[in-house]
Length: 141
Image: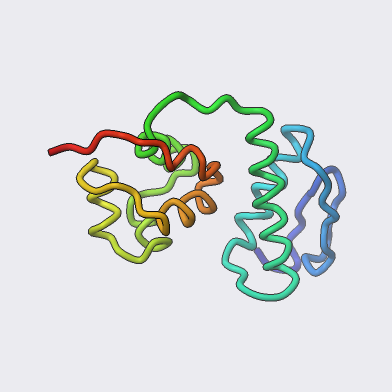
């Protein structure tokens, strides 16, 4: 998004992207959608103000989801697949986060269990509570 484009955050029109929105506890679907949109714009930030904003948004989004969504009672791999579908992600997107396409493929096909590193990374990437990903599940032989 260029600096000249306009974005709306929680009812406030921002004409210049350097003007930072002020984030509070997310309580409405509109605020949730605005937070997701902003997160998508800055998810690549690795330092500075946008990185801190990204971390805050990840926390606020997860908090809203935990308070308002009943997660399905499925195994961790199915939960990952559901969230991938929710966000429009492919296995390649998970591989980019984790760093190994082969291992991600094995996990998604129930051939290998999730590692602690995967649980941490996928929990953040897919906005899932880590507690949902550490549950036991059956692997395929």
